[in-house]
Amino acid sequence: MENKHNEVHDVMFDFGGVLVDWDPRPCLAENYSQDAIDRFLNFEEPWGFWRCNLLSNAGWGQEKIIEDYASTHDSEQSEMLRTYFDNYRLALKSMMPGMGDVLTELSEQGIGVWGLTNFTLPYVEAIKDKFAPVRLLQDILISAEEYLYKPDPLIYQLALHRFNLDPATTAFVDNELPNVEAANREGIIGVAYTDTDLLRSDLRELGLKL
Image (tube, rainbow, N blue to C red; front, side, top):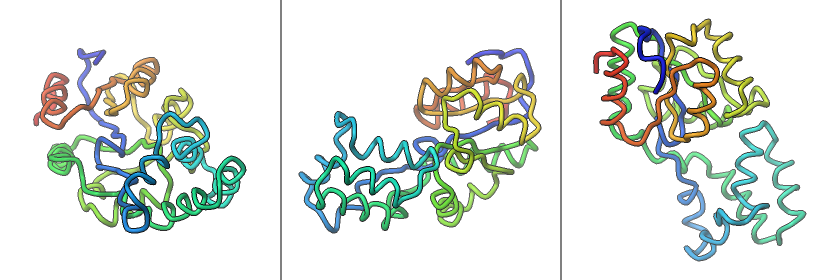
């Protein structure tokens, strides 16, 4: 964390891995074996699922992503990708433990709470539908709607402008260190999320009452 001397008025939150436990495996579990899912979700494959996920967060449409994926994969793997997209709501397992309470407590104190996420609009709408505390967020900037994604500095600048926030009094919580570091470079107080108890401690260090 940086810039601890300023009073924090607002907190922006990442979604996946911070507010929400996101896991693509349940989207595929009823249709494919564990081995097949492991191969599909292999982090080491440069043209695999995780590239598709990045393209989705960058604003590509599903059919374009599937077409791109099919150019380097067989029909069975392409169908797995379509199955994932069809069942995307199943990837939203739960809120991260205790994070609903954090949103509620901050909001009740009059602290501004906002979303800044590498996600798509359907995912964000599903999250708001499933998890009531997320509806406390005053506004959400979604990467796929802006064709920008973290850690691009422009997405932080856009969030500050759209939400009318002062970076020196704004904290940003993310579980990906490059995204936290990018926020710091924009003058925002970056907070790395590992678990909710530690987050509470970090936010208390910034003067928030949690």
